[in-house]
Image (cartoon, protein in one colour):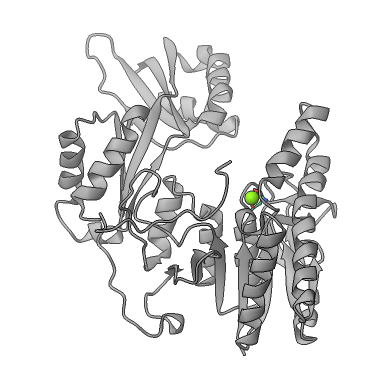
Length: 427
Ligand code: ASP
Ligand code: MG
């Protein structure tokens, strides 16, 4: 008998009908002879609504109370789902993250899982129950306070439980049929990917693809837990994310490693340019130490050639727009210590990334990428690469066109429109 972990997102359990539909699916998995653990998100936009409420009573709610509030969303859906399953004649028990043994550090709003001790889940399963666990939450090891894992954290809960319970697979049910070669809202002819390696999925997630969170994929890779991303609205096979394409679950079919896995884009970043930096050792160090001390994560960095006559250079970097204000303030405060003329802030940028392990061994990928952008008349502002990714920064307005151009140029366009978005308000 196998053990499967299934995770259902908020759009899959948005209302009573959704909960009943999901309950039937869960019962099917149980009837197929599996032990079933289900991780569930809050119904529909519940988490956003709770955040709105908190902001109405306090502009800066304390982390502890904020987490206590947000975890209530998942409690509602877990209890309702257990009721719906019992109504179908099967045994089910729901558990909060804390009861399920999800132990975290004590950083409210973005806690990290440090241990999972699923004793109560094991017992519930051994007694014949389907175990329903509230996603996105845990309990801090030191203070025993309730914590949340950051937005979208239920996926991480699911993978962490799958690892702790040694599950065969972690199924992530969402409102699209899987991972696509590009965002189907931008590229109508994006194709569903049948299998993708952890490495490529990590790069896509880091480059703006929103189907799976980076942290969840990182966890799955560390414990080698295959993820199956699929729709709770259709019965279709979705996308397998795993270390090797050959798995039992795929019926031992050999799946070819694609040269290019997909094109991701991201318009959530901004660019800071530090103008007139003296071209001497220690300057970049001083700038990025200032940014690091402000606890800001940066993405790309470029330094321009120094103007020989002045001995000055410009350094640009990108960072999440949400950290823009903090970065500018920190640099301004340290202006004397670092020594520069001025700062420029630009939040009208976008990033386009091409990802694929095959580019390591296929010459010409970089050339074709830049040709596609040039044919589409897109100007490149910054470039960065890894072994399996090329990223460029362009004007934000150019992003949709650039993504389509690159997607076509690498032969990723499907003959038909494959992507269906089944649910969600996109909030
Ligand atoms: N309900 C939480 C959120 O909306 C967690 C999740 O959906 O994974 O962010
Ligand atoms: Mg949600």
